[in-house]
Image 1 (cartoon, helix red, strand yellow):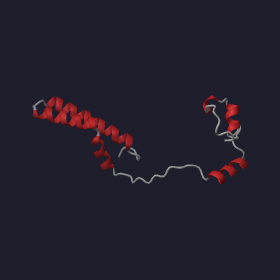
Image 2 (tube, rainbow, N blue to C red):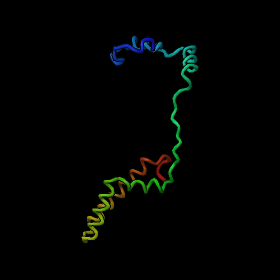
Image 3 (tube, helix red, strand yellow):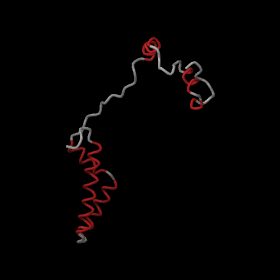
Image 4 (spheres, helix red, strand yellow):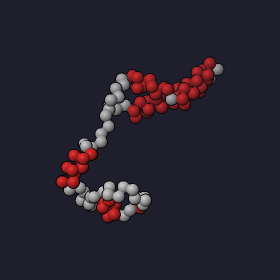
Length: 112
């Protein structure tokens, strides 16, 4: 902070020198310095969650927008129309497993 135009890259500092640069210590900021920085720089940075939450159904349907999933759907339908139902079923099971896994990972409330 005191020498913000320093030509020395910050990652080369040892711990003691780095703490001196930001006016801190191994035990952290003092209460007085912490209050001063809050007054000067404002409250801690936070992220706002303005994004509307999707319904579970829409989240599940959005899993099919993946290009690989679309290619596999095309391959499954092509296999079905060429009367290769075994491969079609296997591909559809892979798509279903992938979709359920993606839904489970992206669902903030957990699975169903």
